Length: 295
Image (tube, rainbow, N blue to C red):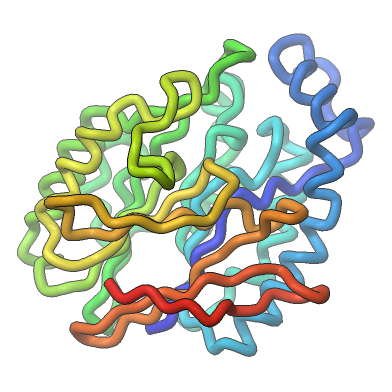
């Protein structure tokens, strides 16, 4: 099976479309950042997603996995625009799997109003709904080929302007640990996906203000799997690494639409063999690099 991993597309809308009543908080600072600096890095996000759909067709991608951060401020206009923009990627033969990012659950009002679920809920069904212990999570997909996806939500609201950290709730971690030892998954190649990086590119934990609070517990829960990979976003640099005593290699897609940093991974899983090839934006389209990572 051929799997595309993308992340952090950050689809923006004109500032005048943002609901001003929801801006008298951290969003005001975020909107100012969009206007003065950040917005220009994602100005071509929609066009790049259309190009990514063409790339998927060209590369015969079976399944698309996206690890969150579709928006900047988690408002309804942004979520609606993002859902529309990624629709071209959701019709691959084996579908589309996703988790929210911290920008999608920016503040508590997003969670209270279930905005992400309203816009992306049609993409978040589970094949093992009895394992969902925290709303939709963990979400599990099982495929005819010996492959599965386990999605856990590590994103949470961060009202403080200086924080963008995440955590996986204990109930999800416990369920993830059980799933990683579940006989139904033991003979499958398993992608475990979440937004936050359990490690940075140099294999060190991310900072307390930016990283995954319980990264070690997350990695411990994944140790029950025999074969697979961890896919994440959040850090806007594409990288991959292997950790001692962890059977799963870690892949960060970076940001697939950020100008100058566009990243993705194209993974091939075939029986006992699996490999990944990095992709980048060059000459107005996504192209694969020559490097292959076997895992």
